[in-house]
Amino acid sequence: NIRFLTADLGALALPPDHFDAAILDMMEPWGPLANVLKALKADASITCLCPNITQVTYLLSKIEEWGLPVALWRTLEVQHRAWDVRPPKARPSFKQV
Image (cartoon, rainbow, N blue to C red; front, side, top):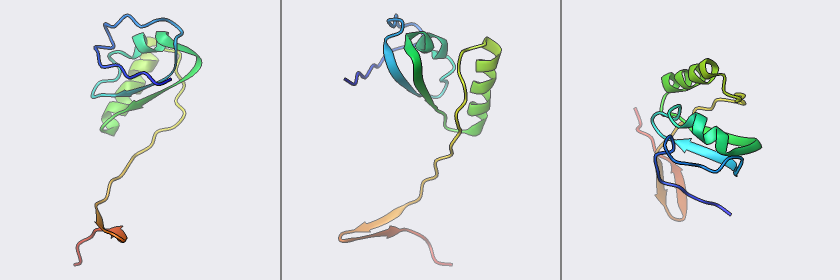
């Protein structure tokens, strides 16, 4: 089952060792991180989506500072590009020089 929560995760009373995974898609994921980690089962996964690399490095520094039991698996940058979609064809959109 999938359960979506909309709440202040830092203040929410989450059941301990309850969730198999968590995704934090917010400006400051370090805020509720410790609370969310307590609610994850052993060997659970957590994903933090940060809008820029400065926030990624800050998140990692907080994880280290607080001694949280988290291992960094990988960091990805997602790039976006516009597409020109006119069925039945689709192609990347670009400006010719």
